[in-house]
Amino acid sequence: MTILRPDFVYGPGDRHKLPFFKQVGKGWLPLIGFKDVRIRPTFVSDVCSAIENSMPGKCLNTGLFNIGGPEVVSIRKFGALIAKIMGQKLISIPLPRLFYAMALRSGPFKPRSLSRTRVRLFSEDHFVSINKAADAGFTPSISLSDGIQKTLEWYRFEKLL
Image (cartoon, rainbow, N blue to C red):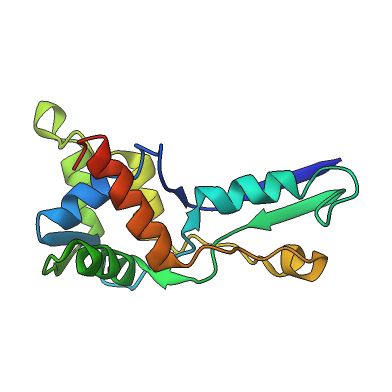
């Protein structure tokens, strides 16, 4: 049996990360807390490649493998790279976690893109080690900047941005 666990997947077809890209496009990014929270963005085609490599006779056959992008970055750096590719200046504004807890309780005034899951995702380090997959012979092939560029192209093509 093979189990693949992809981490923080983004790319063409993904609407779950769209609110983040839209927020960056506004030129300001509220951060949850004052710590530089880290993630490992994983481009969708790298996940597809991992699935292909989990077939019998391939390098990821049999075992549990974390699948992730080529680098661990802070939310701030991820946003800054998106802004740079968009040609947008970005101001990152760290706010206390308590601010978000209160916003979650504000009923009909709560921003639609704010959820408990997103607060948890963007307020704590969220990345995995991909060493086991790398030791088996699998490495991600899409750089963070190329992945962001392809994602932005798709969002624009779909008129989502």
